Structures are given as C-alpha cells and as structure tokens.
Image (cartoon, rainbow, N blue to C red; front, side):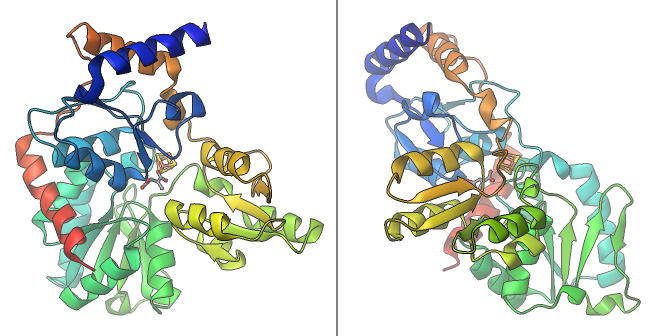
Length: 348
Ligand code: CIZ
Ligand code: SF4
C-alpha cells in the first residue's frame, strides 16, 4: 500500500542518513517531493548536490539531463541515480550530436566564424559539451538575458539550442526584431526564413520545444480574458512568443513561484506551466485564486515516471548495495560540458 511504501522510504532515508541526498525538481509529484531533501530547478539542484560532499548517493528525482548535470558537477565518489531510466525530456531529445554537427557545418559555410552556440540547460550532456568546445555557454530561464548579452559581445550571431521559444522570447526582450531571427530545422537541415539577405539574421533558433509548455495557447488566453478580465496570466518562457506576448508576466519557475508568493490575497492568477507545480502553488496559496492557464492541466509525462514505487525501488537497490539507474557522463564529455556551465556561472 501507499502507506507501507512511504514507511519504507522513510526507514531507508533514516538508515542511510547523510550518505543519501534526494533532490526533487519542482515538477515532481507530491508523493515524491515529500521525501526531497532539496527542491528547486534543474541547475539549483545540481549545484546543491555539488555542495553536499557527504552524500554518496544522489537519487535524482527529475529527468535524465538534470541527473547528468548533477553527475558532472559532483565528484567521482558520488553516485547519481535516476529512479526510472525512461524519465527523459522530449525537448532535450530534439537536438542530438549528429544533427548539431551537420547544422554547425552548414551554418559555418554561410556565416563563417561569426556564430557562438548557446544551449538551454534542458539539453543532453553531449550538446552542452559541443557548446563548451565551441566557446559557448549554457543558459537557464533565469539568466537567459544576461547570457545572450554576453554572447553578443563575443560574436555577431547566436545559435540557440534546443528550445526555439526561450531563445526567441529572450532575444525579442533584448530588442532583436523577429525578422532577424530564423529557425534551423534539423529534419530538413535548413534555415527556415522568408528573407533573401540571410546575412542580417542574428539569432538562429533550433527547432525544438517543450511538449508541456506548447499546450498553453492563444485560445486559452482569449477564453480566460473573456471569462474574467481581472485574472493575471503568468507563463514560463518555454511558451510560444504569441502566448508570452498576450500574458501579463513571463519568467522562470522561480520567478513564477516568487511572483505569486508576493501577490496580494484575493488576487486571481492563471499559470502557464507544468501541472504538479501549478497544483502545489494552488495548495500553498489558498488565499489567492489560482488555476492552470490550460483548464486540462498539463503534466510532464516523463517527470511523472518518477513515482513513489520507483523511488522506493531505487532506494532499496541502494540499501542492498546494488544501485541501479546510475548516470555516468563520460569524462571527455564532462570536461567540455563543464566549460559551458562554468562560462554561464561567471556571467553576472
Ligand atoms: O521545463 C523545465 O523542465 C524546466 C523549467 C526545468 C528547469 O528546472 O530548468
Ligand atoms: Fe522537458 Fe518540458 Fe518536461 Fe521540462 S517540462 S522536462 S522541458 S518535456
């Protein structure tokens, strides 16, 4: 039963003590989050794991690329485990190395040495390593503006992987017109643009997106505004340009949490982000009227693969001295990927 499973998780946590660390991403289910020692966004969690040198086992409740980042930032004596190896991220999967190498070669042919690659942290370790090798940096939704500004001080143009929306929304905020951006389609291996003078394009957006945040639509906003013009709409910048434009606020997970925290009691909010987080915000702010921007709620199916049974199973394997689902990024990849992460962390 659920109670028995919870009992067992508590026992194992108690038994392993400080040898065990459970990071829980904001998008995880409550049944998992209740056991998290630390909660946060993907980068915060990896950094907190890095600071916790006593943890031999890091049972990462999140998705694969986050566990990879945790492995890259922790020491070799620390073992990072993902409770379900099927917990991937459809956005990270939209950019692989082979496609990226082809894109880079073709873009170099057109633009020469004028491009710097950036990648959202929601990408594989290999893509981060590619970016690190070519002088670029990672970005998060909290620091995207600063990192793009830094990138434009290095080169004339940016290749932004793998989320076109975060790239477009951030570049637009910095004053770059939409006409000066184009999408790189990795299926067609070509730049999607109506313009002839491609030399004026400054932002090359990888054609990737988040399958959760794409579910918040202009239609959702129109019907909400019609129903209740007083509701404030707040969305994550992984949503499309049109949705961000029609919303009242857009920002990272931390920004969404802090904004609603600071809002007056009685205010009404529609939130455009992952379902477990929206549900948690609703439960924590009963004095405010909070709903999902998409009435169907939008879960991240891969995040949800980590559930109580998987967490327990993973902990039992560790208890028996036989951990499974170990995430190990090869050393050569780690070295270059960490360059991209470090460059980002130095930009302030
Ligand atoms: O959409 C996601 O997966 C986010 C916001 C991840 C993270 O915490 O960076
Ligand atoms: Fe990936 Fe989107 Fe899920 Fe985040 S919410 S893990 S970007 S699919």
